[in-house]
Amino acid sequence: MENKILMNQKLFSKLIQPKTISFSEVKKIFWSENKKGDHNSKWPFHLINNANEQVGSWILTKIPYDVFTEIKLPYHYHGEKILVPRKSLTLKKAYEKLRRIEEDYRKTNPLCFSKIDYFSKNDIRTIILSSAMPKGRDSYGETFARKHLIHIDGLHRMLGEMYKLERKSYKPVKCIIAVKEE
Image (cartoon, rainbow, N blue to C red; front, side):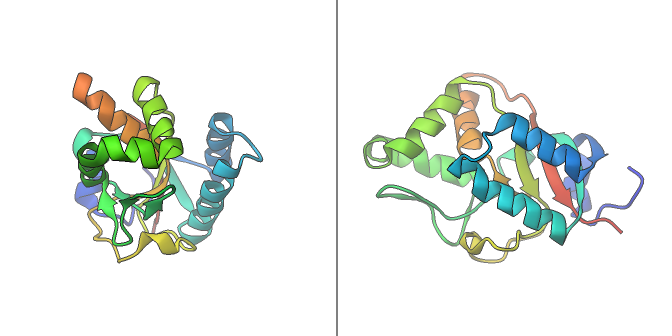
């Protein structure tokens, strides 16, 4: 990569074949995988725009298992149960919690669980992450350690992928990451 990435170098060194892409390419990928005008696409697209204004550089890459499971997730609540508290959880911790409360969660959060269930049986699309805390997202709670990537879009897909991991080995996940450069 031409410029020096300003993110945790140990974390960056684990990424698989990272390549710089333009914000136009980020938007093209996002809209090819999401429905324009869909309520579920508006909020992540808002965060993607904020991330672009905040950090301005993007990479397309795949992430290994140990990076994937440590992605920090924002507060996640719809239905009656809080899956990710305001102080945040890693993907691995959120999945462990979901497995502990799964039966009740299915009943009290049917829409959320149906999305996770769908992605547990289908191919995962591109997830979008950031190496910096996204502005305009109060649901991220406490400040994150710099050793984690931060979720912008793809929470249900990532949890669905965790279910698949129980049945098969990990296949590196395609992602786009907002990064700062010098």
